[in-house]
Structure formats: structure tokens, C-alpha cells
Length: 282
Image (cartoon, one colour):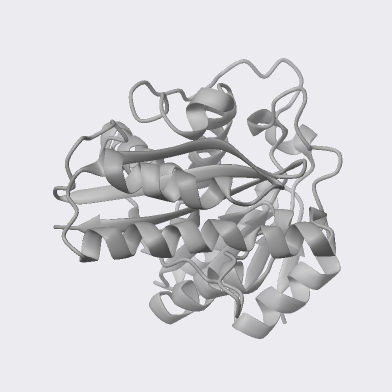
């Protein structure tokens, strides 16, 4: 039976015992309200490790003052059922006060890879991500940690942080999981009304169009991006935050499709901000 704990001390005690037994440990960091995309991360972690910790923590540090912290969906009971069915062993579900006690004033920040894409419209976001993930790494001390490609910039940022700060952890990327109609699975999809849910399919259509352009031989990233934008702009309920092409390793804009190129977008459908992307390696 899966164990749900709420304190750092409990996590460390569990991991300490596993280490005494010579067991490997995997970590899946999440903000909860888990769906099939999260489950794919847990499935991979269970396959790779003897023991798996899933963190369920809506991190206030990565939300801006006008963002949806209070409204962000939460359902620990459902999260527990999903994690248990997938074979995870422990859920770490701390209160904000457990992670950030009174007087907290230390942060992990980064230049470069956090400046583009989501970093432009959410300037404090990645400082919050890097800080909380660093804390989770120090609390759990896993052998491997699992992140989804849907948050591709986050994946690249975490890889860089691990390299720069010498965390002895392997970062394992996992592919995007989509609904049957192509929409990338996201906890924020629950904000969409039926009309918006249908309109949101424009993101996956733009992804498919962009990928097809590259597969047909287009190497000018600006032409691919413009085709994707034109596709999105045909949807009246869609408002583009960004559509960009960047080097996946350093999240800097590129003019030519070469090496690992990330085509990423953030699009508002009504009031809901959704992201999607694809990566090509040439």
C-alpha cells in the first residue's frame, strides 16, 4: 500500500531505510491533479527503480501575482489512487510552510535558458521551479528524476541546473501524452468549457503542421513558425503568447533547423494558457 507523508523528516526516514536495503530511488515531481501524462512518468520510474517517490506540491513560488495559484486544481485522493495503481511507493504532499518556513530567503536562479519562451511572460516562474526542484532533490536524493517533454523548457532548465550544480541525478525525459483528439494532457485543460476545449485543438494542429514543414525539408525556422502562427490565428478563441524556435540545449533562438531544435508555443484559449511543442533532431 502506498504511503502518503507530509513532512521532510518522514521522506528522509523512508529513503534512509531504502538505502540501507541497497534499493534505487526514483522521483517524479508534480503539482498534483494527476492525469495520464503524469502516470506515464510514474510508470517509467517504477520500471527503472526499486522505489518511487511522487511529490504532490502546488508550489506557490512559481506562480505570479495574477496567476491561478488559488484556482489550481487539487485532488489528493485521486492522485493517491493513480500513484498506487501505477506502483509508486510514497507520496510527499507537504504544506507550503513545510517547504518554505518562516524567513525563507534562499533561491536557485538561472540566466540564459530561462530568459526566452515562458520566461518572458512569467519572469519569476523558473526561479520558483529551480528552487523547489533543488529542494526536492536534496530531500529525496533520488538516483533518477522524471520530467515530461510537454514542459520542454522546464526539462532543459532542470538538465542545465543539474549539470551546473553537480547533482548526482539522472534526468529522464518522457514523451508528451495526448488525448485521443491530439490535445496535450494538462491539469489546466479542466479550466476549458466545451467550446474552448474544441478550440484548444488548434495547438496540436499547429504542432502537426510545423513538424510536417520540417519533414518536407523546410530548414528556415522563421517560415515554420509563421506557418504555425497562421494556423493558430484561424481560431477566434486563440490568442498567441509566443511561438518560437530555439536550440533545445540552451533555449536560445535559432534561424536554422539544426541539431535538437525545439518549436514551442504558449497560447491562451479564453483565459486559459496552454503550452505545446515538438522537438526535431537533424
